Length: 173
Image 1: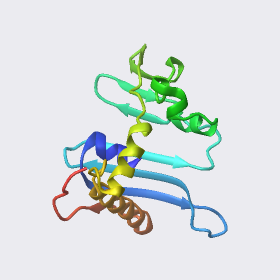
Image 2: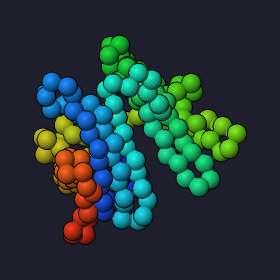
Image 3: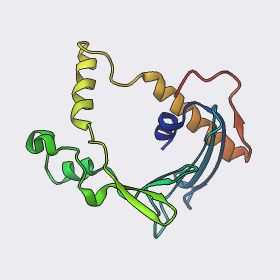
């Protein structure tokens, strides 16, 4: 979720978080709420729960003229679990059926929005080629450092019950 917030909204200036761990002291996060204030003023609210009996939409982005909502998860995972692969599915790989598309909501009006084709079939071969040294990495490794910094700040905020403000200028999202 943090990765998606950074890609969509940019670098983070402040982090506030609340977390509850499982009973029994295993230290596993059970309920998480993270509020991010991005450098450009946009605010992201990320949440997750292992205990929630009736989860809400998987993804929701709200703006001044509408809201985009996605209820399901990326279908590529279900394809892999069922034994399908990019080789067996060809161009159908990563293409979501219409029933799985997101919805753009504007007041009482809802409109289906076609999903972009998933590209696991392109990412993993690109990663393998990068490991072999024949292509550049498909994702900047510093993106992972930025995500880890935000996650560490969220843990710190939750532990201290306070917010976190970045002291140096963020390098990117």
